[in-house]
Length: 197
Image 1 (cartoon, rainbow, N blue to C red):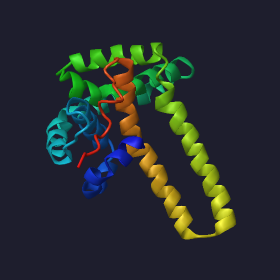
Image 2 (image 1 turned 90 degrees about the vertical axis):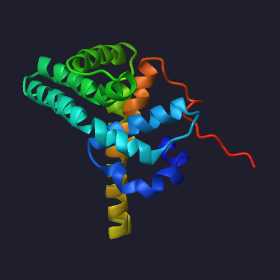
Image 3 (image 1 turned 180 degrees about the vertical axis):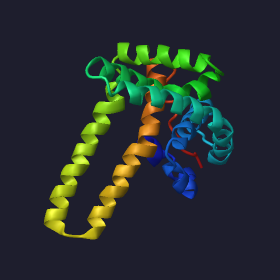
Image 4 (image 1 turned 180 degrees about the horizontal axis):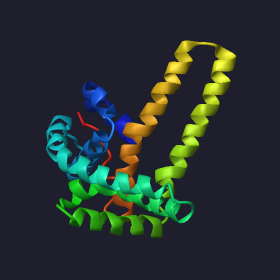
């Protein structure tokens, strides 16, 4: 959430694009890489072009991993764990494409290595526990708010917040987990530099 607040001026003109499912993962990886490499400066327009260029490869790899995770989820106990690991791999695809620029089958191998690393470094909770808790909080607010405030505005505000949580916000978290697990993350480097007059 802090990333979007820091760059709200740059991201406001392209706000609807931040809510495109799946594509937003790749887009946010590119934005965070730009911020990391350019001392906190991002170029949203350039990132859009790069994301659309990477999208065919990205979607094919992501869907391949998703299909396997989906099938594993049907097998009790062992399948649930395997499905969980495949979902971590699924979350890492955009980062492997953007930060490591791998191609072909090496993407799958690197995603597998990253899933092991994320689990080993105990970063996986950021990918599922925190969003689940936030979603439960939104659900609780929804129940309390609609009971106490009987307003459609409150309902739609929580719907938008939920969508924000599961699309742009989770895309940022995926990339920050990747950077943290691979020790390539520097909080200072993606901080927006304040202009000195």
